[in-house]
Length: 398
Image (cartoon, rainbow, N blue to C red; front, side):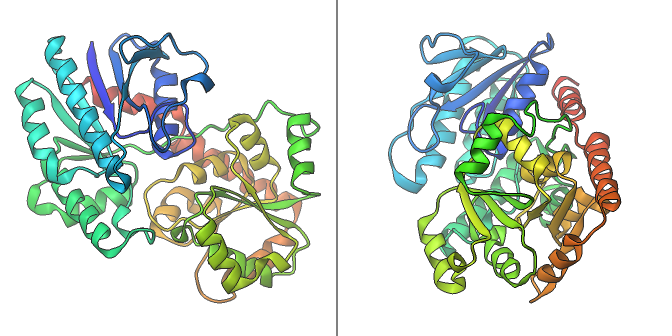
C-alpha cells in the first residue's frame, strides 16, 4: 500500500481547479487497494470545508473523516489575511509529517499543489526524506503573472516557485507548455518532471431540456433562446474586459451569459470603462455549484468563450470541450495545446473576437455538429478522467 498525502487544495467536492481534480482522483481511485489517500482540508477561513453540505462523509473524529475511502484531515488556519494560504500549507505539512512518523508509514509521497511555500519547503523536504518519503509538486500555472497580485507578491510567487521546483523530487505538470517552462527556466536544478493533465467528462447531463432545475435557472436570469457562455473566476487575467467589449460590438441577438465569482471592485471598474449594463444581452448570473446543472448549461450553450491567459490546463476549458459544441478560445499556447483543431481562436486585437462572433453566429448546424464531435473526441482521447486517474496510479505506485 502506497500512502499519498495531498496538500494545497481547500478540500474535496469543491468548485475550483485543484478541488475538482481531487474530487475526481478520489472518485476514480476509491476502490484502489494499492493507494491510501490522506487529504488536507481547510477547517476555517475563506473556502473552508462545510461538512454539513457534503454527502458521503463519515463522522468526524479527532479532526479526521473518511470520504471515498480517503482519510481527510482538517487543518485549522490562523486568521492572518493574505498569508493564510501559506500558513495552511505549512500546518498541513506538519500534520502529514506527524502522521507519517506516528504510524511508521513507509515510502510515503507528499504531493503539494501550488508553489506557495518556497521559502519554507527545504526544511520540510529534509524532514520527509528523513522519514523515508518523497515530495511531489504540481506547480499549477504562472501564478506570479496574475494581475490581482501587487508587484511584491508577484516577486514572492516567482521566488517561491523557484525554491519549490529546486527541492521537489518530482514535478507533475498539467500542461506540456508548463513542463517545457519548468525545464527551461530551472534547468540549473535538473528538475525531474512528468506531464499529467487535468481531466474532464464527456457524458451528458442527466437533466433534460425541460427539467425544472434548468428551466427555472433560465427564467431566474431572463435567458431566452440560444446564448454564448463564459465560465471562470472573475479576475482580469481571464480577459473579461476584451470579451465584453468585443461582444458589445458584434451583431448577435443571443445573450452573453457569464457564470462567475463575485468581485465588486472589478465589476465596477468594467462598468466605468465599458458601460456594459446598457447592453441587455450581457448577463452576469453568479456561480453555479451544482455540477449537473452546470453541465446542462454548457451543453445548451450556442458557444463557449474562454479567455484564460495564465496557464496550464484549465478545468473550465476541458469541461466546455466535453460538453459545448462551439468553443472560442483565447489564442495562447496553453489553450491551443488543449483545443487543437476542435476550437476557434481569438486575439486581443481590436475587432478580432467581434469578427469571430459574427462569423460563428451564422454557422451551419452541420458544421457546428462537426466541431462538437471533434471537441468530445479530443477530451476522450487525451483528457478523460479514467486516463488521468490511470496515469496518477502509475506515477504513485511505480
